[in-house]
Length: 491
Image: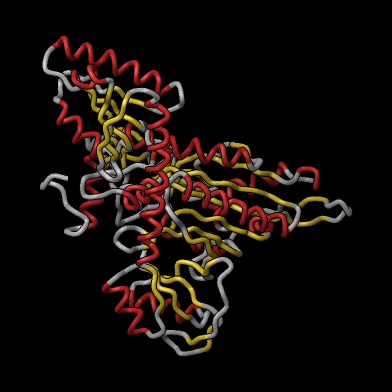
């Protein structure tokens, strides 16, 4: 990036914000704490949506849509759930405005108060389980495997584009099952789907694990998660899948007649990822020159920039560029021919580099003579001269290399920023000097977990799945512990 942009070393938070804004991903809106997702940012989100949506449908799920307004009484039916979301709820009390007779503009009409206040959905378990009560009577009606793409509102006071905003976009799956085993299997299956997406599309390695009681979703019996490491060593929760037990079925009296003719409560899961993944994408791969996008999620995988001096050269080069574009598109590569005559090639190079386009092709009069093109990789900044013969195959190979390289680079970063600590002093020193994931023993109590958080600002990110058992002593209390858990400071 040029000097007007912060670097990761100088100011990581400002670096992140600069990239999001200057790469045209998003901007702050007139509504405090909310964002406008700009076309380029939304194009990346659409790629994420399309990949995830196919994965959901491939595992038997279907999409539906539920209201964004939730009666307040619904939220109060599940005690842990309402307690978990109470401080973040936006509440609708009135349904009409009127002109102020005192001349102070438009005011709320006091006579138009709702009989029951409505919550703008922070999540949809309650409205969905109230709906499922009418859908489920028998074991023949199960399972229900439903997902919805929606917006939610969680009233945040301290916000950051994509990572934490008052309103954000997400998907939320809500499934209903006849048995505990089937519901638990579903929750783990969706964690596998999220892992697959994070690693194979986002090129972002993740740790898979289960949350502690203190960190699990409000109303869940178990919360499974994927945790990613950002380049400042902080963790980011990239997706969660919850085994809800029978808590919501009990709260909304959702029962079914089993094969044996008994009345039983339904078993439930919910799972979701959000536009927070956009923030994860930026922070996992980008550098001081701007955004870096994995090819599988790039709106354009290749940009073609004409090099010319005269009008005749411009036309000749653009004609060749169009042929190359067509050939690449025929094999499924997403291509943009930047034939704007309002900007010079150097400006275009800088712009597309900053916006993270994986491959750039430059083609000029000399290339037309030689049958060549110059290709630049965004991830390594290397440049190559290629013959135009069989160019599509060569570029597809390069795109695959870039996708793999980004994952490998991120994995190596995580591995070099993963540590073990056996004392609180060692634990704190690692967090202060290195950051990253710290594997440490914990005595299993909420009190100790909370105390460590207060002292170090680090939370238990997860208890890794298939975690090896290892006898040790808690870094704070010295009490016995049977396994290490993963701590980190986090977004």
